Image (cartoon, rainbow, N blue to C red; front, side, top):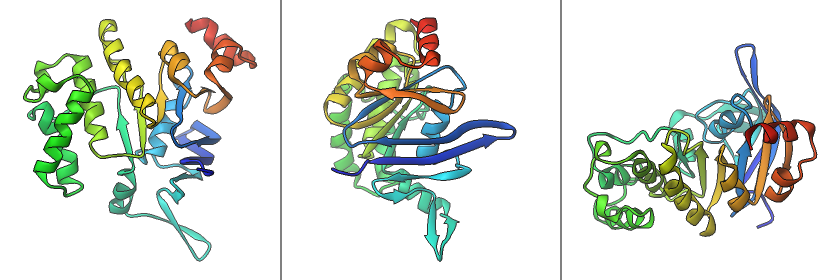
Amino acid sequence: MTKPLVAIRSVSKHFGEFQALKTVSLDVWPGEVMCLIGASGSGKTTLLRCVNQLTTIDSGGIWLDGELLGVREEGGRLYRLTERQIAQQRLKTGMVFQRFNLFPHKTALENIIEGPVQVQGRKSDEVRSEAIELLRRVGLATKADSYPAQLSGGQQQRVAIARALAMKPMLMLFDEPTSALDPELVGEVLAVMKELAQSGMTMMVVTHELGFAREVADRVVYMDQGAIVESGSALDVLGAPREARTKAFLSAVI
């Protein structure tokens, strides 16, 4: 494919006086695993939320699979899409958050089935067999009938990943998916993400897990104060960074 799956062009975002993103431009290619690193408040999560249209950009544009997100152009002017149209665009992405956001009154299996049936209007029986396979894929085949309160944090996050995959997205977004987990549970979630990366899924991952980035990322992007400071292979950015700000960040966290 000669076009990026995600094309981010000169995107800016303010929250009041604070500028969270400063004319950010970035391409994500099909099958690429991109890890976004940087200190808290550097703009990583905001960028992810803009791609998923949970946060509205102030200027610039984001294209997913060649489609401009959030707006349509007509007669040289831009018009914001309806919430229904935006929700339709959002189906192309799956997002996994720091907190698991599972329905507490539904089992693991029911949590996974909910989206495809209610949002996509698919048949329950068909989705059920796919959901069981997804639970097997994330190592939770025996937990189909368990409720979130009966699962560990790591297990809940793996259900959340399976739930996102059930919508058959072309892009997976991960916002620090292990930051709310106890240290001993981090590995089981990262293992699922590694398998997903190896399967060819396009992924944008905000993470503090530099070992994961070093092992899995095709590209590492270091952000600071709402801007991209450095971008390149994991070997280059994590092993031999060029920019002083990148070096200072890595020396503080490694």
